[in-house]
Image 1 (cartoon, rainbow, N blue to C red):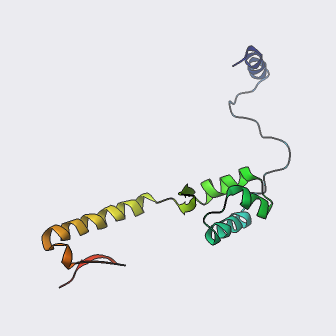
Image 2: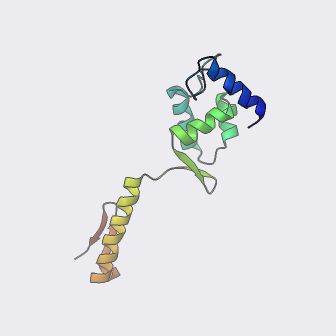
Image 3: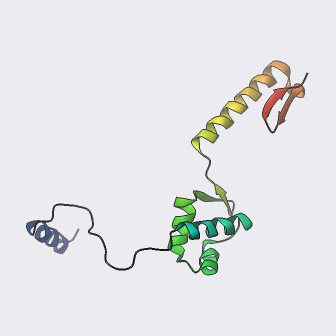
Length: 126
């Protein structure tokens, strides 16, 4: 930190400032990160999972930084192999581990020819 900045901070606190947080900024509020734009960004990603942030920004006329915040922070997407995919929740990860442990247990007991992994999870065929 520069000495100029130190002197400025000292001056602010001598004048009665008590908070270390930034003061509210003047100017227009950020209106790009609203529910309407979030829904439009989500729709574009669902149509084309390989769409780029810059393309979304140009199509929707939203600044790229706002598109980034919507995609990563609000929608929870991340890039995997050049595709946008939802982040896996901790609950979903836990369920996956439980299902595969059941499957492993069934394979060890019955042999893998009797195990069926369908939409509902692993089960034994009799």
